[in-house]
Length: 483
Picture 1 (cartoon, rainbow, N blue to C red):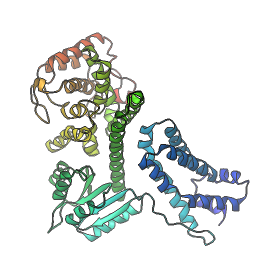
Picture 2: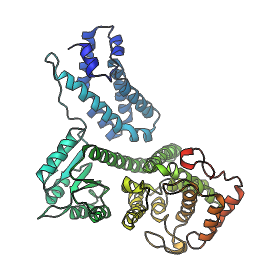
Picture 3: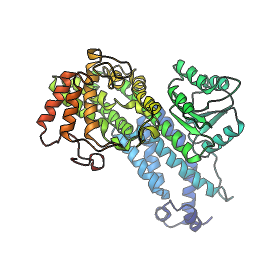
Picture 4: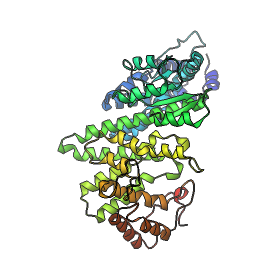
């Protein structure tokens, strides 16, 4: 094997840089590159991450940064360096958002290098398991569908368990907990996909596993019924590899972010008083990172959660909230739309008018958000804020039809702040509204959509904002300046 051949086959490697490290000795460089392949620390690095051993994680990612640089894997080295610094600075939000993305890049590099070495006898090629923790369960009574889905998924970075019935799937889930389930709806004569999802929802261990329905039906009823039953997305048959991989990867990433967010908040908020400030800082970073992830689902609402939190804090400050109450309100407002994780991108980003069925799916985000946040007890009413921010003062809101002061005050505040931002920022269907129109709409909604007291405070804030500066103009693409 020659270095010239490697340059042709592995153009993404900075081989010249690697040769400099090896003092121009091509044979030595090949040995170093082979040792890099043999070193494969995918499993070790992921084990540190799963255990939360951040000291071990930092040491391992530091070593990988250096060895990657030695072989000219500059991009992997740069990504490892960022993770190393995040571990050093206790930036858990960055690590949770980027860990698996990094491992996929690293694994892809190993596979490409290994493929070249497999062609030459003088170097041993390696077979490795990769990221075994990422388990996809494929459930379909059609053998061809199972085989095709398994081939697509296994060609990337996933372990696959393929099963031919709903009964077998439930039995397997009692032993193995998959990261995601790809589920066919029609599986006669046994239980169908809807029944599988219902059984999962009744089991606390299984309820949090994301489900994607696989369907060959071309009617909206099948998709709607599946989404309303708890599925997070759907994949049409026959399968498109790129679409399948994009949706599976996105849902797994969001699910990991959600679970690690919950774990970090619960862990940090139980710390002793001498660690309170550290816990608040970490929580703030995690919440903001998660809020940005939620907003990223919709290109037209970039920064929405951050702005709603700012407006909510402004309102509550006028109402005399304490510093601690304001902090809890900020976190609650930042995560008021977290349930949109469970709404398909196609519906959130639709530029035309939503159908009644699509609007019903959008409305489920408040209940989904409540389910995600309900176990976080150290931030009062954080789950209520997600569930009730679309309730109306006159009782015609959703999901519970609460009326007046039966709606928690924190949700009434967020409701006003949310409406203000919706009117003062660009959306897929219209530009932002002039300030006088926004004021008139809030005035019209007093006592019907909005709590009259809180709505009047917002009107006072608008009246003081003579130059319409309260809305955020930092992102021209989103807001576009005054209309």
